[in-house]
Length: 276
Image (tube, rainbow, N blue to C red; front, side, top):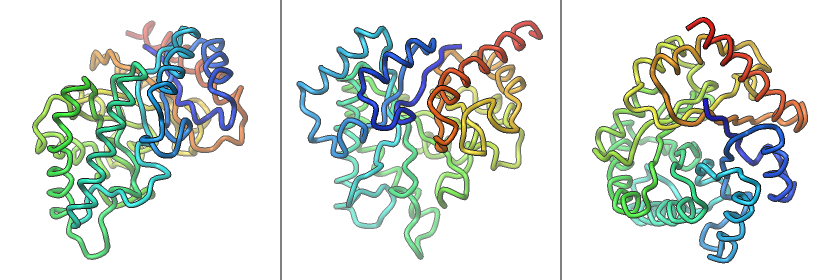
């Protein structure tokens, strides 16, 4: 397994300190929420992009990609009927792809439920068609930058659009580009009626990225989810991507959410390897 952590767990800690701590814990990569650099991607200068990438390289902690792509943004939406809003969203995602490339990353996780949820009165099919149209427009920038967009299904607590892995794949298939794939998240998968290992194996051919967390909004090993069958499924699926820790409840503190989660995952990986 290749382990990364999402940087917003470090809160307001300067990036250089966050990178150093993650590396010290033993993480091999870090995933960036763009708003932790600047809430507007257009305001992240070429100089700042180079500075952040250099910090990561100096720490020997590569930036693997971006998530929370549209958080803290205004007037952006993927499924709205208004074509101007969708175009503005496509342009913003395109600039995020350039940011991801400039930072040395290779994947962007498309979650951001508030910017994709179906507006009141809109059918699922209409929202789906709008999202397909928008992401199809984005594909040339993904090709140019070499960035994979990983569509993230989220549970019903988060929204009303793309709630299952199957729906995520349907969207990727409709776009029809190798640069649009699937992201899976343990917290989100726990809301499906299918067992998490089965979801992983059913969708192995589309899986580009993976988030490790728990339905309690904390990290792996901090709730009721047993990661042993999950890691066994990732092994069986021959998944070679990153397992990235993403949490939403920061109350346990940085040490437990970083080193504690990594120690747990390494223990589970050892058990999985022995069982295999």
